[in-house]
Image 1 (tube, chains in turn red, brown):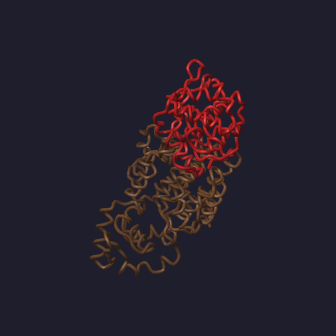
Image 2: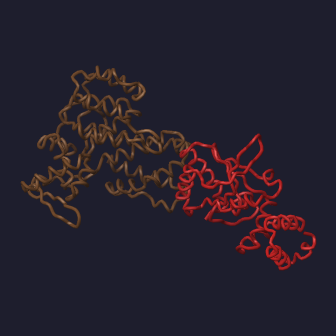
Image 3: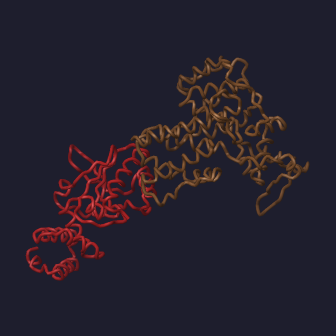
Length: 196
Length: 317
């Protein structure tokens, strides 16, 4: 499991292994539990690092590129770090990459919080408000821990309203809209429904 | 950083001591006590070429000894063990010992005037200081002929009986390991399998060894040859010195090369890579390396280095 105090060590180790395996710079966007813990938003452990995509800087502007397959040297570097810290084999997970196709909240790139872990690895953590957006989206159809994370972020009503509007832009089906309404009602947030 | 520098320096000192102890037993003049372990001459020569990076006197003593005691050295094993040390290391992206340097040893053993041959050496493949030593190699009188009756020189003693061929190494392997198939023996003693097989077949026909077929392998044991082995095994143990030297000098090379030289985590990661070899070598000297799983990331550094130095202290006892 990855604890907060291990995050820095693990990413620093990954930076060193990238140096050994390729010596090429690599920048990734990280969301999920690792980003929550790294930015001190929520204290909890996680078993993997969710990677949304690769950051490419174009004229000082951040562009997030989908990763279909990690480069071989990155796979080798991350497997070595996984072995060294007793993590699961697929501790670097590009599962959330689908979000890039669906679209990101406006201003997402500008809100990323970057951290350099050495000469090669830069991690861009998604911001608190974007975590609220993603966590609300995930709360509607997945595990309970997303709901817990969502409320642990202490979102204001205004933030929940903005997040609700965004999640509806991700899925315009009637069923999904009903799911959102039911969720808000169940959580005592009915007043937001009329404002969406 | 201090920890890393200390690690590198201690490893270097202990490894140099190991080499000097063996060269002392072979007749090189030094203040370091002679080893009690049975020496593998060719493994020692190849490893000394690498250790020459850290001690030029060791290198020149080694070369002078070879020049003066050619008759004891097996060119075939120099080439086989040389291949082992000169393959490109995937981590370092270079070989531990340049192939061109290893190729100098057969030249030293065969050429009438080796210095002339060394003038042709390509500076790109051999460090300048090595080339200078090779070119100016002269008899400084610091090496004596080996006293082959000494226990650590069993290999040379039996070479005196069997000649410079695979027979000595096969015999010593069977004395200490008791049995083995031709493949396994060839791998351990750094000779071609066909040569080992032919010798074992002849020995079995003459009753020196016997063979026993078990499942899919034929194992060979000493039979009449046991008489010759009397009193040998009780004093020593079998050590694959090539494996030991490669393992230790590889660690030293990494510890002297960036980025490992400055990073306890990367060295710890390397320790995990070599933990299998560390366990095999540790068994020779009854020192077990730590359980990797108990130490995350760089936390392995301290317990592994402690075990490593304990191992080296036992070797150098």
